[in-house]
Amino acid sequence: EFWNAASFNTEASYLHFPTFHGELSADVSFFFKTTASSGVFLENLGIKDFIRIELHSLTEVTFSFDVGNGPNEITVQSPTPLNDNQWHYVKAERNIKEASLQVDQLPQRIHTSPSDGHIRLQLNSQLFVGGTASRQKGFLGCIRSLQLNGGALDLEERANMTPGVKPGCPGHCSSYERNDRLSLFLDYANKTKLHIVSEISAYFGAGSSLTYNFQESYSLAKNSSSHAASFHPDMTLTRETIAFTFRTTRIPSLLLYVNSFYKEYLSVILAKNGMTFCMA
Image (cartoon, rainbow, N blue to C red; front, side, top):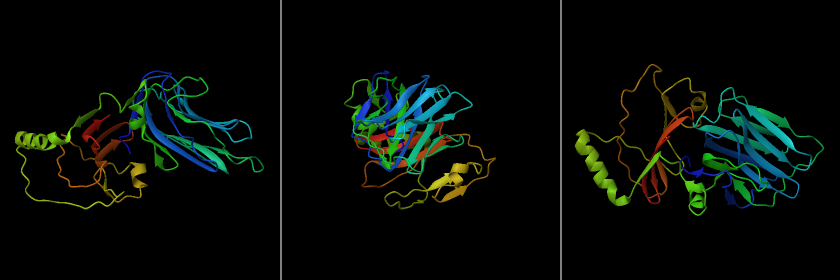
């Protein structure tokens, strides 16, 4: 759910969720953007065990944990500052054999677990997002698309009821109520002299998508499991005008998503409260 985001406005603000159960296998991924120099993205404590992911400095993301063998820390160093108010991707994994940390396209850092040590990550407190229970500096900025072991956390729903945290990322989304959709479309058609000459359509089942790659050199897209059509790398767009019609009974639905190496994105979402258009 790429559009599910929360903005943390003070270092003391955070969201809390039930305990993260990742005893033998833990997988955490999210996007963030910030202008702050440091702050904790996520933390969950146990009696002695813990797991924590943080922006340690302008150029460092750190994944630290303890499963009973003593604290371990994995750090990815970026050649450029990470507080550039652009989107950055973080993926931290831990299993009984090893732990790893990935940031954007930078080389993955891996830590091998001891062969004769403890293997279970035993946590019992609440999961803190954007802050900590251990009084460390909280995160200032926006986090989106947070997933734990493949499941998405509803940041926006929890942010709606939490002081110091706001749903979404300010200044990048516009929402239109259901009653405005038809008038919005007709107004657009009027201004652009839109005429539907022929219909080219496709049916999408739950969880399916169609991907177009506009740059053949985009390695992540090439490795994607989705079907893709590559275009000539010299192709340039002089305008950004997109028009489509849809029919669905599923809410929420991601209708369109365009991104550029994680740094900018555009999305059109059929949300619970209407249509949402996001740019960042």
